[in-house]
Amino acid sequence: RCHARRGVLPLTRGEPAGAHGSSGMPSTARSIGVGSHQVVPSVRRLVSQLLPVSAFTREDRRVSAVMWVAAVMQGFAQAQVINTLPFVRLSLEVTEGQMSSLLAIARLGAFLAFPFTLRGDRYGRRGPFLIAFAILMVANAATALAYQPAVFAGLQALVRMGTTAVGVLAIVLIVEQLSPQVRAYGLSIYGAGGSLGAGIALIVLPLARLGD
Image 1 (tube, one colour):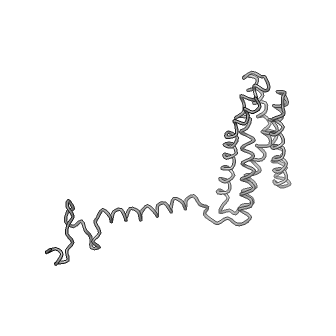
Image 2 (tube, rainbow, N blue to C red):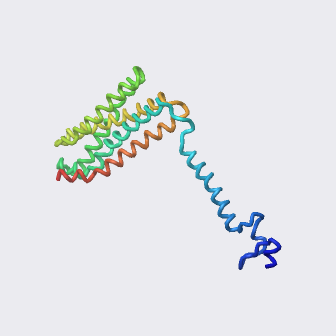
Image 3 (cartoon, rainbow, N blue to C red):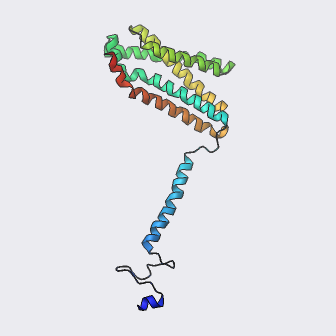
């Protein structure tokens, strides 16, 4: 009663004197409130680090979207033959050593990308990029119909040529057409698209069993 009359808040059991501040709030409640106020700015700073330093223009969004779609398809085509390698070897009826030789020959197709890059430097990158992308898609689809080891190696060489040319020309196109403030961000979007395409190729791998 004496405490109530004098306007002094009574101490809770086990709480030391001075635990109440001027606002009458217990120190535990105040520490929780302060902690939450400290977490929110930290989360905001973390999210801000994941955003581009400048807003995308309409042209930036268009270029990034187109290149992202191309990267998804490129990543899918490039990873598909590796993921389906056991099925391909059984279909071609070759040994593991022969399959390794076929893949080694196919990888030499990357050197065929030089004409695309040279023409891109002289006449612009868009035309060679579209041609290389078309060759990549057609050769990758035609590989499913290859029942001879030599045909398989030849088509996969075209796939390697297409992926190499598309990858190099896409980077140059992104750097040339995006605003300087978002170029690195646009390149990261392109890289993420390639990783997503490779992941999709792995997800749809059970479809290869339908040919058994």
